[in-house]
Length: 149
Image (cartoon, rainbow, N blue to C red; front, side, top):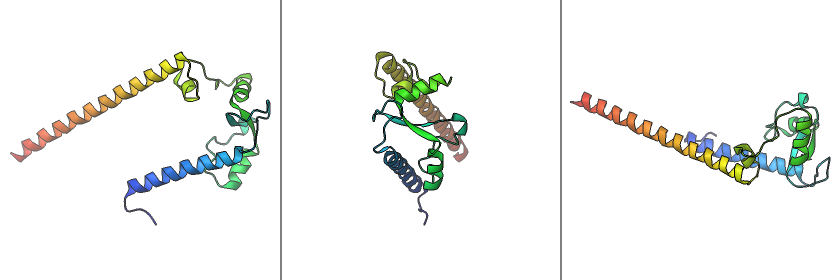
């Protein structure tokens, strides 16, 4: 039965999807190790043949569909996965001094600076949007007051 409040329903559905993705991924990776080096840290799913990849967002799929996609994959640690992608000519390997590298867990000085700069841009954009909304609101109120007279 749908919620009367759509915002509550969306929040519930988002929370459900996050929980489902995390649970399915953790269950699949439990007890597994890297196919190359045997590590059990920072495990990722790698499509053995990248051309066979349907999607990377498989954790909320039905079990049958998900396991069909996982049959085309192997478990690799982040380091081995990056090496494999680099050897295939995939530019997926992240460089230091970028926010994406920071998001993957790197905390070197260049990556921290890149993340801080990104945060500054996000805050500045948010302030600009709020300021624009306030200005538009003021214009709208002024127009409404002009009609009321």
